[in-house]
Structures are given as C-alpha cells and as structure tokens.
Amino acid sequence: MTENRVSAIITAYNSERFISDAIASVMAQTRPIDEFVVIDDGSIDDTAQVVSSCFEKGIRYIWQSNRGASIARNRGIQETTGEYIAFLDADDIWLEDKTKRQMDFLLSHPDIALVSGAEWWWDVTRNKCHLEVRSPKKSGAIRREILISNYIGNPSMVIMRRSVLKEVGLFDPCFHWGEDWELWIRIASHHKVAILPEPVIVYRSHVDNLSHTNSWERATCEWDISRLSIAKFRPAWQRPFLKVRAWSNVTLSRADFLFEQGYPRRTQIAYATCALITNPFEKSSEKLKVFARATLGEKMYQRGRQIVRRWIKKSQG
Image 1 (cartoon, rainbow, N blue to C red):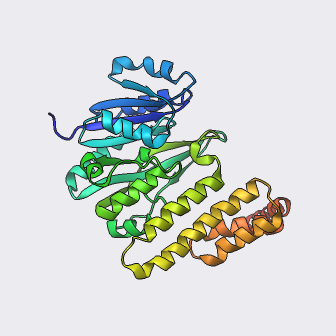
Image 2: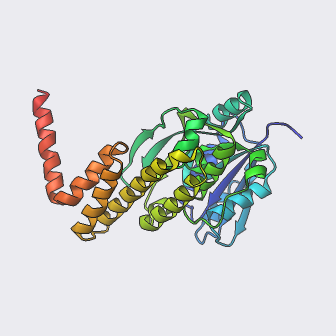
C-alpha cells in the first residue's frame, strides 16, 4: 500500500446546483488525491445524475437515506482507507493547492493531528466575497479558544490523520448542529492542531445552507457543546471566564436572530444588552451593531449610519 494516501469525502444533500464545481475542485488539486467518494445523504433532486457524469474520473458514489451530516461523513470515513482524510461539503470549493499545502505541513509536522486554514467567504446571492483569516495561535491556545467557538472551521477546510479518529471517535450523530465543532474539540483536547494563514477553500454562502437555518436552535446546540466541553477543561479555574465568553457569543447569535425575525423590541434589547455587558471585549463591533439596531430600530439605525458616512467623507476632504 502506498503511504501518505489522501481520501477525499464529499457529502451532499440536494446539491445539484453546486456539486459539479466541488468535484472539479477536487480533481484540479496540484497534489492529486488518491481516493474519492461522494456520500449522497438522501438527495431527491438531480445530484445523482450530476455525479454520474464524473464516474470516469474514478469517483465512487454512495446513496443513503437522509440521516444527517454526521452519519454521512462517518459513512465516508468507513468507505475509504487513506491515511489522511479530507472532507468537502458539496456547496464548497477547494482551492487548487489545498491538498498540497496541508499535506506538506502535516508531513513536516508529524506531531500535528489536524490542519485547517483560512477561507474565502462568497455570498452567492449578493455575489460578494471576503477573506476570513483566523489569527495564528499555538496549539495550546487553540485548545482553549475552540471551547468558545469553532475556531478550526468547517470540515471542508480540514485534513486530518485517520489514526486520530481511531482514538477519539467519529462524528457524533447526536448533534444535529455543530457536530464538526464537537469533534474538533475532542481532537484538540488530546492532540496538537494547526491552522494555516492561507485560504484553502471558498465557502459558498446561500439561503439553503444548513448552517443558516433555524439560528435559535443552532445557538442552543452550540451552547450545549461549549458548556459541556468547558466543564472538562483544565485548569479548572479558567472555566468560569470561558463559560461567560461562550454565553456572550450565544446570546449575540440569539439577539441577531430575534432582530431578523422581527421579535418585540424589548426582547431584542434584552438579549443585545446581555451579549454586550457580559463580555464587551470580544466581537465588540458586532455586539454594538446589534445593540444599536435593537434600541434605535432599523430605520433610525440606517439613517444614523448614513449621517456618519457623510461626516467621515466630508472630514476626509
């Protein structure tokens, strides 16, 4: 068996609009992948027909009844044999040097169990794109920060060693949201992980993204993941502050959801205020924005932004 084999696992659900681009991005890697499987999690659109046109490229296609992302990824892991595993959600795109960059890093750092990277965030609806880069941190700091939010990123950004999963386990199907984050926490608590500063994927944001639906339920699940993980963190004296940081982030997500859904102003203000005062030092601009929108209302908030912009433009000459 050839060493250092990389298995690529695409998970798809009703992905006919995007999956051909995802497959093309895998096939275009400057460091070719060694094994390629698509796990279709019960699609009822033309995903299967789109994938079938690529069979000559060595892609295996497996359909299963809809059981969720965790079970689909676990199926992909079980159906492949490479020493290294790379995931790709069907609506994302790998940059052409993703596999090479990350494999070069893992091979030169045998103590690293998992490596992620930065991402281009592409809003498909508005056709706007921006780069999201996580500030470099040592593995020990990532181990702490990942308890607060998914600092490693989504599965499309990751390559990991298969041997690690044999130790910590696979994706937990009990989590409908944040199942990738929960696995990263387990890995980071036992092994060193790293994040490259260079972008490795294009994340395509669109209205059908699972991560963009039912934000309240998602925030509740993420709070459960965070608080349960913090309860195991050592040293124990850091747990209270970590819990406050995590709660502030969850409350911010809920405040934003309440605003978008048009809940009563007093409810919006209560959550926005809680998010701001519990931890004003992180995501400060986001928390101030949500607080201002809740207290002023959207019309007055937008009017105030226009006034500030005109003042800045005038002051700059």
